[in-house]
Figure 1: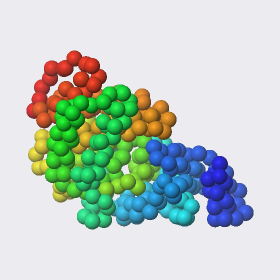
Figure 2: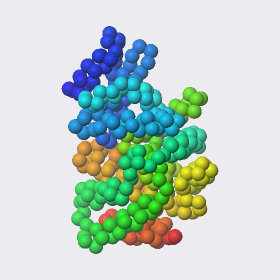
Figure 3: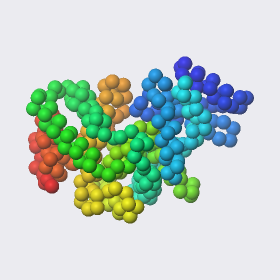
Figure 4: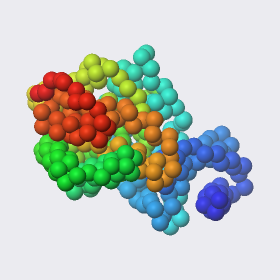
Length: 334
């Protein structure tokens, strides 16, 4: 309650004498919260990022980078870094997740892909933090700690830990060998807003403050292997190949062979799915956010299918079978 009173006081200082109504806009998986401030004739978004938990500076930096790249992100109108408040332009409340269906999907993903390529073309080394081996491994370590340990209640044997570490190392080698670009890290249907104003502003892009410099296929995986919405494999492949063709034409650092590109896409996906399983389990067991539990089966299905397709990842599939007491599946490997 005290934070809300501080936020209201800050807004009244910015807009003295104006009628002002504040309503919740959204909350994310961190300590950040967002409010919609309604003023006469317009609405704005207020980010509440408690400074003891969150740092607003990366948001401001990445917003400037992405705006310069020519994509639609909230503009920072006012800031109070000491209190942890930002006043932003409002990109509306229609998420991709709420708008996506069989009729709209191709158009919305085409726009999202075009915006992604703009971001990637603006990439420069040594501007954003590196998506390096240590960060990739820290992310994957959430899986044994929170999904296996806390969610399944299982303690891994030494042999199982060695298996997991070997797969993590193999994933890292592939990911670190890929071409490098700016990576949003959560470029998916909850963070993309439908902004159909006819001026090329679709999508509006949110939640980019954790952006890094890393593998070129990462954000495409976030988009097409979304934890919150599922598409048929053939459709995902079609969209991925369309991106690859445009990325090659734009001289982005994607693999020149489409099969190699798709392998890179799937291996980055495996790393991301491992991380998300850990994050969603942590959100439930540590933070009491049970809404993420319903999304675990889809993420696990993505991970299993990727592991089925590649011999180097099969040890992880066998480990998953052991943990979930499943009979091993017979399938093809490449």
